[in-house]
Length: 215
Image: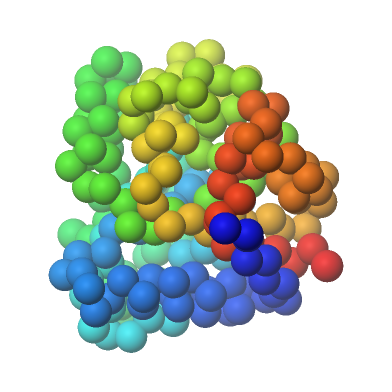
């Protein structure tokens, strides 16, 4: 299957495209599990919730595809961005699911592993890094080839060092949307011109829908 590449000009368009993908699951599912990343793109991504109809809003559940185990946790920043959406009752806090972070690496990984294995994702939205990493799946890492769905990273090539993440195997059964925003021109080029290249993790998902504001 060829990728579907969509050019956008603002966050509202990004929100509408993602919302449309979520709505596709609405008639067939009582619960729709959506995976989102942390990082700089999250504000653009979670805008999709404002574009959903009321029926679908009641069905969606939000999960992190990866989390930091030290310092600036993804969930802290995401909750700041979700604050207004929750306050206007678009979704409830009970629809947002983050692993408990205790400071114990083994326990924190267990919390993430149990949460993700109990809640297979229907749709994942993945921002793509300059090196084409997705979630905390970095170039030439074990998370590309692992047969497990989740992984703990204790020495990440990008700080902070400690992270938990879905692996490529953990992402494979979900519908995927990849986000390339301005500044990621090289990443988009690498994605488009490589296939299953261990140097570029995102390149394994050629069937994904690509959303970009890079013309």
